[in-house]
Image (cartoon, rainbow, N blue to C red; front, side, top):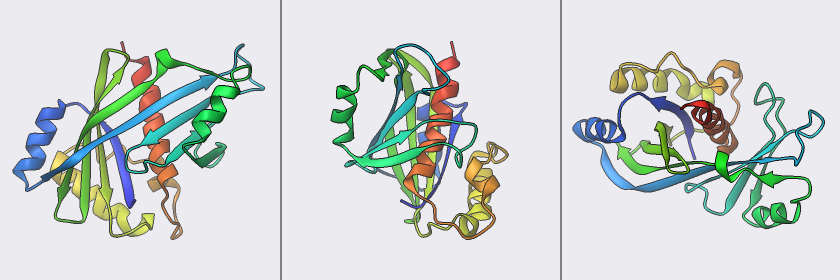
Length: 198
C-alpha cells in the first residue's frame, strides 16, 4: 500500500467514475471498507470505544483503533482476521454497534500505472451517507516524497478538496514510512462525520 489520501466527495460515485474514465482510468476491480464501533456496555471515559475496520486491499488484516484527539495519541493495532473472533468473546466489555457500522463499497480504477483511485458509496444500514474517494500513490511509502505531487493530482483532477489535507500530511516533517493504519485513520475520521449526517 502506497501513500493514500481519503476524502468525502460532493459528487455522485458515477460522476467521479466518469471523470476518472475521461482521463484514462481503467476499471481495476471493486473494494470494500467497513468501520464498526465497539462500545462499552455503559458509556465511560475510563473505557473508550474501540473501532474495528477492514479494507479489501488488506484482506487478512483487521485494524483496531481507540480514537483519541490525534492519530499519534490513539492506541492502534493491526491484527489478523482472528481478532474479530476474540472480540465476540469480549462482549461483556465491548459490544458491537452494528447500527453505527459504516460500509464503503465501490470500484477501483488504475491510472497511469502508479495511481489507484477507489470510489465508493458509504452506507449506514440501508441509508446512503455519501461518496468517499481514496487516492493511492503506489511507488512510494514516504509521506514527504509524495505530499506535493498528491496535492497537485487532487487539484488537477478534482479541482477541489486539495485544501482538506489528511492529518498525516500536516504532521509529518521527517521521512516517515506510511502504513495501512494511516489510511484507516482517514477512513475513521470520515466515517465519524458520515454517522452524524442525516
